[in-house]
Length: 176
Image (cartoon, rainbow, N blue to C red; front, side):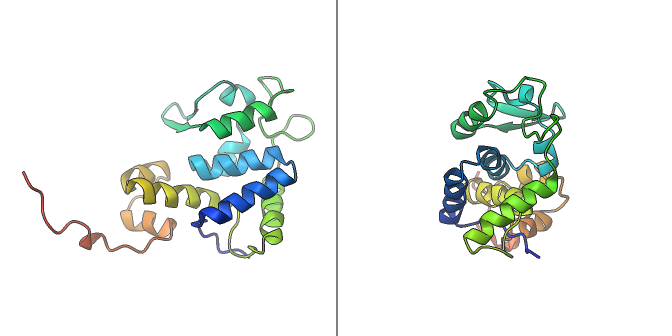
């Protein structure tokens, strides 16, 4: 059983992407890229249809939350949807049904096993990876709390595996 840590090391992220590319597994590479770059949950990703992403710069959920799509993700989307109809699921199985969650979990587990990363990461690590790297770049916990529907800063820090005492952050006061 994996412990679902965020993938903090950029080299490991690149190794995972590289292995997906080597296997020519565009579908699962796109799922991975979406997960670590947007923080979307697996169910949300699996329920996306081609019309939700085709020629778009953002994914919009519940008409409230928008998730930007970087150029790399847009290129992967274009490659994956080349022969699909706009009503098709983005990540479809036979019969145009969304692929099964266990298919994604098994595929990622196999990638991790090949890289000797088993029991450290799972698909649940993807959102945490996004959140960890977002926090490292912007130090914006309020956005992460909102995106992940978390009620406290402590909960969010624990989710991204960051041990930080918020009481020690701003001790010099505000200069006005």
